[in-house]
Image 1 (cartoon, rainbow, N blue to C red):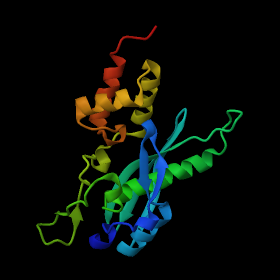
Image 2: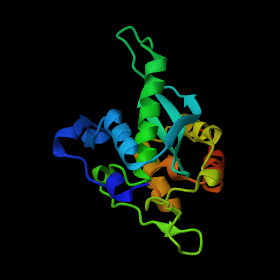
Image 3: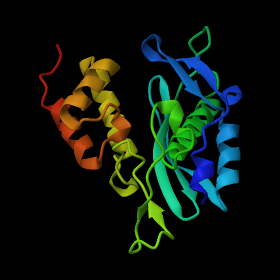
Image 4: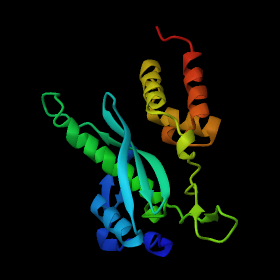
Length: 207
């Protein structure tokens, strides 16, 4: 694995922008650029959809990227496309978009395109006594290790609780920062997700 290649900033002509939530503009590169960078910086790599779920307005995918023996997992999402009659256009396409988003986020944990999120490349940490032949990193964003990451069932339960109690995404983000110092549900550990679900269950029922 060539970290210098993986962490190299993308040229300006590849960077695109799209509208995000709350009027924000988000920068991104297409999935093909991520794939080309992984091909260039890794001897071998593979990506698979580990879990997927469909909510009222969003498709969510938990993907697993394995590159030269290093495995990273991350959630990706895509808004479900609805036509003028309120019918789902293509759930398969929405899931594919969510899988592409998951691949991109997994790749950022290896340093690919991390500059687009305002981050810095991860610092390799020796895992074999310091001889540098194998490395690991948490990506510098507080993400749990794969085995401790919240499950898709817990993620579904959190979103269901938000809908039940009328909790907006902004309110949820503020709650996550206050309780866990994290701004995204996907960054929670299983224990933290359980605590959050218990918090919602203990709330007074809405009339």
